[in-house]
Image (tube, rainbow, N blue to C red; front, side, top):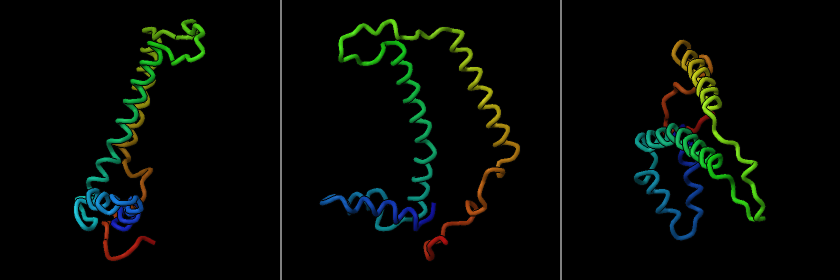
Length: 129
């Protein structure tokens, strides 16, 4: 992310009445975007998919254990699918194969799917092309 991109995206919050300007300064950590702001944004962009994945897994676990909300009052116990050890082992095996393939890609050729623009340091004096 560039200084310009962080400034433009976060300045959208300044449209919120009364608290917008204070909110933008709080997110920036000061009066302008700097390296600490970009580092903080990178950390959140890195960790957020893991948090969302964990919450989705917990959601599916509870959905399979208790069933969904049923406002019509019909019995839905017959629709529940119990977790069986074979299904769990199958899912874990598929996950491990996926992780191994991803680790092979990341560890042996990390720049294969990358963009050379990612190695350009952020410059606050110009906007990106």
